[in-house]
Length: 275
Image (cartoon, rainbow, N blue to C red; front, top):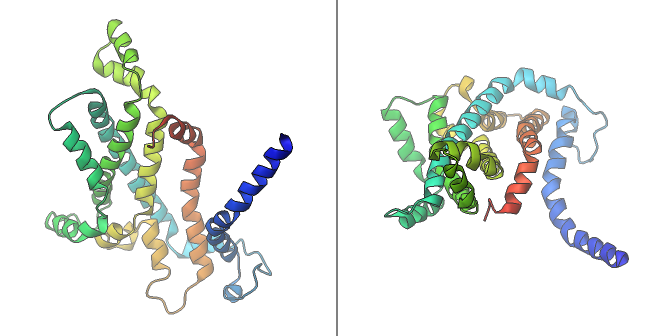
């Protein structure tokens, strides 16, 4: 039996290995290039002759990476917080109450996910320009939160529906009101789903490029995707070792968030937060 399991595992890994290689290869190129000397960036050899750790502090000092990192953390964090706070009561209402137009509203949330932000970017720009809010990080927070709310409500509602009503009714019998029951009983049970939803909202805001490029003007307001893009665009010569070092450093906060919330992510996927 153990031999059969071993052979089955080896066969599955053999089938999955092309996919794993295709996914990890760009990251390997990024990391190795980040440690190369400028003269070796276009060298066809795979390994650098010298591992230049100073590429990272040099990139940090010359590229304006630190302000962009702070801007991205602010925009992504506030977007996630705002989207989750608005989505929780909306998802709770959809999962617990029956009202006229509930089905139509649920379908509207689903259909809204089919629209790419790129389609709406011109209209958003004209709206923001008329309000005099161009080149404002808070504008990005509002726009990103608005685009994430429908997705967050849809995810949370599907999970909230799996939580038994008996637990809430037991709390009501003990004298707790609906709000206290929601905060003390319901939300702790929904923590895995909230964590999964927050991860997706954070990553969506962290990686967004088109709207940020359209709305932001001054370099001190650039987010990380625009800052990394500025290291390449409009330059006669590109320091690819700095570009790859910046791209690698930009992926660290997301990796840290995944590692921190990994137990909630696995539990949320297993219990049906993502359907």
